[in-house]
Image (cartoon, rainbow, N blue to C red):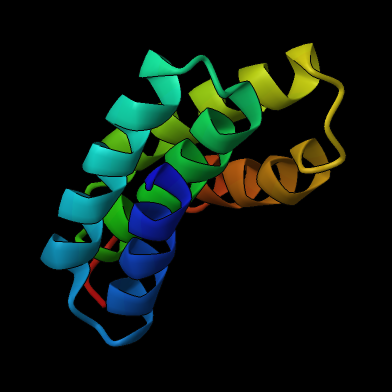
Length: 98
């Protein structure tokens, strides 16, 4: 169920329905944490960060991405390499009007 909600969130994100994406990510995150599925938790946090940034919430996006990176590093997931460049980009580039 958690993976399905995450995938639904990704679909909403891709369709530009970012608030719906975020809603699904939070539901997925709750499940991942409840069952202690760390890889899934990290993935959801990273996708959530992308949606938050899309809504001009860069500070929150960075926080979520940092949490995802910590999880990926802890479990030695190669997905950490996906998060690092995005975090670096966000930290180097101030968010302005789009």
